[in-house]
Length: 263
Ligand code: GLP
Image 1: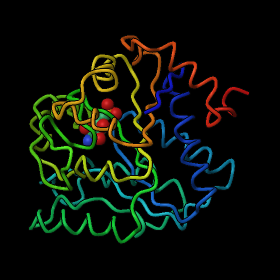
Image 2 (image 1 turned 90 degrees about the vertical axis):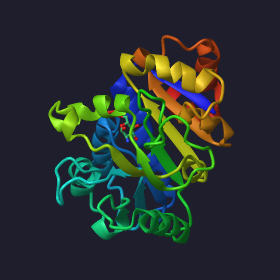
Image 3 (image 1 turned 180 degrees about the vertical axis):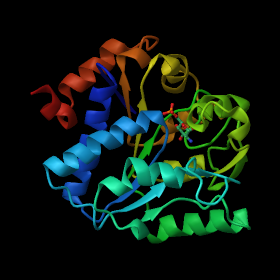
């Protein structure tokens, strides 16, 4: 894993969007793994901005989202499909049929999970997977005790996750679904690159545990230590508890991957 600390959430979003944009330029038919949450809103704003400024071609890329709620009414504005349409897909020229999310309204959830895994496989796997981190340490909706070999499946959301996400349901925790379909930790680890994005003081404690604490299925983000190419991009507010900050800063200053950001 590499870890980069930027000044604020805007700089985090700019760097993350730049990595996605560079991949798209190099491989217009790449497969992107996308995530939801407030953190990603800024990332998508930055990507839309770069897209316009640099005439990025999204027409041939395909996207797979990490997760979707189960049991929302059809067409719900709170679904992750609605989130993705609002924050990204309606703002760039991507054919909607190239954008995939698990279907949380499927009658047979196990069959839907298997279909989603198969679709990722048939697309050739995910080139770059964006993940946020929940306050329980989840990536996707892989709550505590998720096996590191888990695949896409339905899961019960932790009470803390439902409280955290209630903001997106007008503060009404009872409106937050109790279950979701999520890529598994094993699914995420198969992406060729995983980029974890964390901003804000609320993430400081869990980020330090996820990055510098012991590897444990209690915190699914710690599984990223098993990935050969994972990168965490975080802001100062999320970084105060990191012990090896001096080292991380020296990586950012010297690693050729980040040379253009230090120019
Ligand atoms: C939801 C998503 C997670 C995401 C988390 C972070 O729980 N399922 O994939 O990591 O939100 O949310 P936020 O960025 O709003 O803190």
